[in-house]
Image (cartoon, rainbow over all chains, first blue to last red; front, side, top):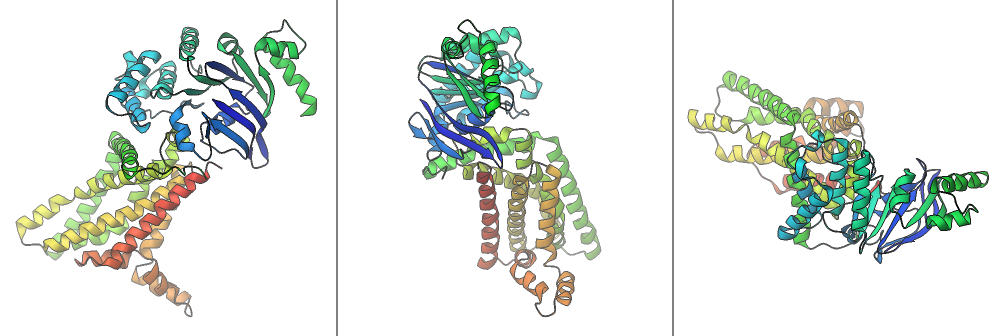
Length: 244
Length: 255
């Protein structure tokens, strides 16, 4: 459902993403791991059509992300890294605005709204202004905006940012429930989140993809069959350094 | 090129209306907008009342004559946050990843700002009621003047939004739009024309600016009760140009 072929993104002299290729299939949760500034958010911004790749090709559900960006945006649910929200709006009004902007009307809008509210457990804050909500609730409002139109593809940039431990567990559970018939790609630098829910892991550092596979496969490749993801990650980054 | 998908007229208008509704509601949610509106109304109406009592003439010319000069700081104060705040709060990313064409977003914002300005402008209607009560004002001239004021505000809003789209900093957006406003208004002032002509005697730059660039000659025609095609076209084309430029600059942020 997501196909990335040799994608590069440069900002002036800085290469934020360097010749990256990967795919994410239906019914799959893929964790995108890397340190801050590794290129995770840049990659997700390109997948969401917010910015264009300098080189390479991105296909979302068979559509070209550059040429058919509007059609692509209808198929994705995207939570950006800073959880952008119109904070002066009430939660219910904001969600309805997003639903309408995503083309939902009438019953479809109401159903999408109720489903997103239920999945993200927002009933208690629906009539509150967003800036009066806690960080965790604001993050859940952001998640609800990505889910309201029931998209087949979810792109989540640091989705557990601001969550307490219970909310993190609830999020992992939610992701597993959403997995059916969907391709989910989420970025994080919290290794435990990735280990808990991902079917596959992409490891990125300094814009380059260092690993792509299940955790056991990555451990095998790294020559450390018993290693956890944290150790594999550290190993791959260290190995890559001299060539960087 | 991105956003090449063709939208039907209905789809285009529906998307634009959704943005328009949100943006207009955001203006009325903001206390600062009420402060701007109050200050503008107090300044414009008190200036008018002053000349009304001095001249004792039943018309609104004094109100509409001062308007371009009041709009120079007032409109940038409205528009400075439009895009600059979206960028600062990162909601720009949210907006530009919704399945809307960037022109729908730009037009929705522009029309909402125009709607807010129209509401503020209509705050001067009690003056019309007062004049009608005191005598027999030229209703046609007043209606044409209001149309001119609406077009003038629309023009100022178009470059104000462009200035806001060029920067993250609201102060820079305000200063830039105010500067552009000064150029368009003062280039129509006869003393400025004389001075600029005096500085460039062979080119007559002041006269050229007055005839080709300045907003005042076109606006003043409405104040005389004349609705000319050339003046209408000036406002529509100039506003359209700046709205289009606004969209171009937003598209460029993808690269």
